[in-house]
Length: 57
Image 1 (tube, rainbow, N blue to C red):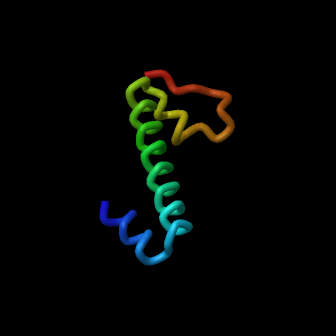
Image 2 (cartoon, rainbow, N blue to C red):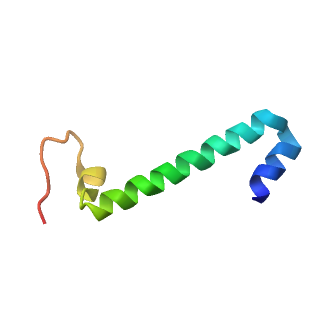
């Protein structure tokens, strides 16, 4: 909670919006990785350059 309040204090609404967008993107990335691990899709996140193959475990 300190980062949004500091952003609003230092930069106003524009900087607060930027900090909120970065926070939201970080949360989405973490959820996507966790869902990928849950459904065993993580090899495609890291090894799939052209996505013509899948790695079976």
